[in-house]
Length: 479
Image (cartoon, rainbow, N blue to C red; front, side):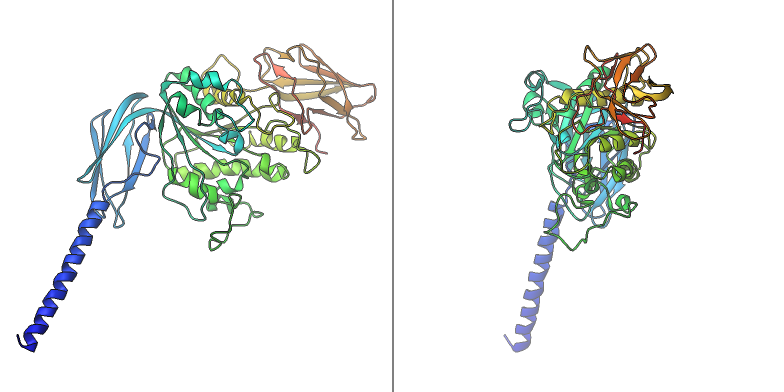
């Protein structure tokens, strides 16, 4: 073989090797590029009924993806982009199931045991995160019986694993599970009690998405576009990876909310506030700000959003009286449309920031949803709310909304009312429930000008409407 022949042989050999290598990786990439879905889609999931429900995922680049829904045998098609990303929407029927969804780009992926019903995102800090089994040495009241009797094929649960990130993520970790005791035991207690009552009242499937992280502030749960509206919040440097915490603005939205943005839902639930208690005036703006932010990100309209007012707790001498944060939450509850607050004035524990009565929290959120979102009637969804204050000499007279059947203390004495004169010194008032509302008087205040009820760090509220829902702490002054 002469030198020219040797050179030609080497070139052919080299090119053949390159050709085979490229071919191998192309085949491998096609194998690895089969349809994949983010964790929010899976067996046992619930899709929002009567909606255009988005479904998305990845496939081979530029491949046609077909989605077929078993409830109507209808097929939908779209083409993946150059990076393999695709998204489409399917029409869902009235509540029912189980159904299946088949997704194919040449290779088929099937989702089974899918229900159509009502879907709620449940988020916040430790009181939303607190599972039915409770925390160590901190129980959930009545949980053992509730867990033992929890089997319900019309409720489905998914818990998003805690993660933080400086950039918006495409996926998170979590898995849709059936509602059976071993799964309920490790699911958010507040969310479960909410879902249980809603499912029982409506008779339709309910899907609950729990995405919470104990001890966190509200700012980490907002997106970059949402948090920019608040000039006192500093956006993180995205090059600070490795040194940021779960308290860094946007990082929990990026990792635990963003991957499901667009998933068809009915509404959101929120139980948070303790970590922002020393900034009530800012929180009063941040709370509706978070709701508007999530609504803007989801792009499905002003969906319902209900939240728990933090329960009274003895925070000690460090920081502000938490009644100011409860007031901020109450004020926020009417700041924008289609929201509401569940009051927990009667279930707080002096030395436990995680009240055991999560059933009260979940069910009071459910009353709000059933009345305001689903239009059901015949029951009350709010505790008494101060309507008017009249001062007649030394007597203060209060009337209340959400008390058409009257007020009660269930046998307790009214001890949490205080009145003050122009000197701004509040003293305990003698309080009496009347046919119209409540009358207050104190021999120490002959000319009262202001009233406060249960406006303390820790207090056990004793004022209820006849339906058993408590009044929030309140004040008529701005001192």
